[in-house]
Image (cartoon, rainbow, N blue to C red; front, side, top):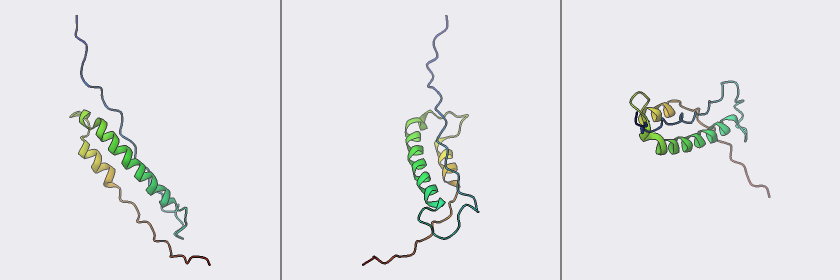
Length: 93
């Protein structure tokens, strides 16, 4: 008779970071709805999801898997294009 396996379950895969826009996806005209605005919003959502994932499953990452620090380094390895500063608009009177 064998004993049941009481080892902790393996954690689900960590959240996938958003893909930065391609070089030709941004027109460079500082649009209000620029692809970089959406990318940075997705990046913030990913950072929140990643922090929650690490809080929940960071201690369950085994020695054969990446450790939590390695996951954070991979997450921040991509450097995003800086957001353009929009021109100041005068209020309408």
